[in-house]
Length: 350
Image 1 (spheres, rainbow, N blue to C red):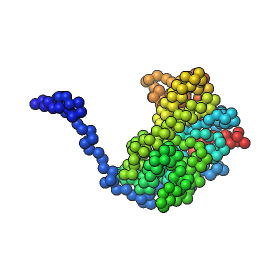
Image 2: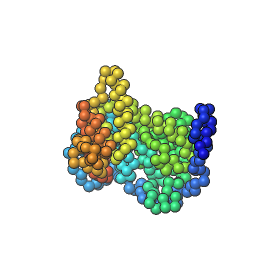
Image 3: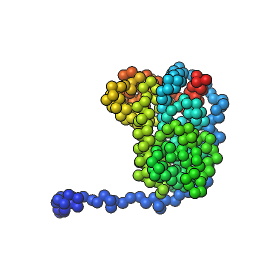
Image 4: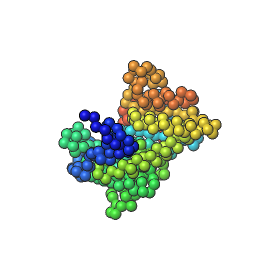
């Protein structure tokens, strides 16, 4: 029998009562079994991070040379070089190269996802990172590690209180060894922390994350309001850097969705304001570094083509540079392409 009830919100009768959403069941994180990092097996250690003088296999690509030249030209003109990356870039051992480029002034803005912040923190804190997901997911141990979840979330909450962004909060935690804590933490490997370097040098390092993407979101200490506010501040900081992109360079390294989407929205915001001022943001260089190669990276293709839906190709290599910019695609493993880019840039800077 159809039951007519009064809606608790509209005070009108309706055949299907509205549920009070605040009473819907939620997962209780307080029941999770959280383990210390000392019990975790790691697939990467600080020893896997390239030294600056490492011998690396050759990699030949004319487009890489052009991108390196554009980076140097942009910096000599005082224009920005924005380096946006996924976590896999640092997991291939490139942290020291990126830090050195920031120290030399070759990069003006770093941007990444939450996973990169996690790996950077763990390497700096214990000299190891990268758990075996396939093994630990079997019994629900995956991601449930005390130090990573506790300390990173503490840093984000403190950043929220101090009204700073997500990336700055992580950098401050590592560089100052959590000076705001009692007792502070130890980061014996902070020399290979990109976040610590960016904080020390005053270079923006923004984190663009969604809640539920990262293992730190599983921990009972995760404050989703603080996470949302701090990463929101980072989005606005990133958009400001993009607003200065005329005659500059934007690099996307290994980010299939986050990088292209955050860049696209930021560029639209920046061009909206520029148009009101009678200005342009059209003449700049973009480059996409990826394991995937494209037969023709400047042709969008048809909706029946798989690459048509690949965001780095569509957004970074085609749509945002059609009216004055230039784009380049650099295929290959990041253990080859990033070190070679680093060498070519510092040679040109010198």
